[in-house]
Length: 141
Image 1 (cartoon, rainbow, N blue to C red):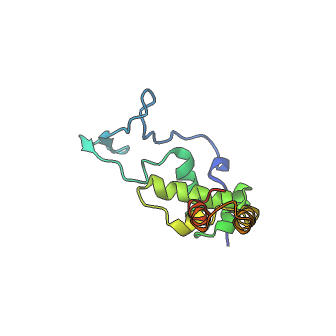
Image 2: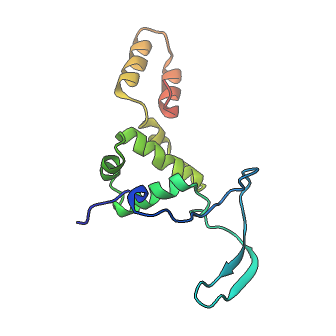
């Protein structure tokens, strides 16, 4: 299998797609498409695809995720990030694309030590069962 090379290490800088207005952060709309070979141009109002609306960092993450064939451990290795951080970035991309993140994905963010502390607080009567369940579902301690 070919080695995965991070997008940032691929060579000379290219111009990148800008999806948000640099002045006010509003989404930009495409109004002109042009053929680089024959200069034929098409003008109008074109909507961006959800993937094109992702910021540059999210687009690079998606590209690496796809090249890694969805293997989070490979993405983790290439980026030098922990599994929970890679999983969090994936969930941020899913949300940015307009899809809900499943509740069990959010529960996965809580570290084992945090869960242990919640269960300890429950056993000591400091928190109710409902409070612990709510915190587990939201991924917050």
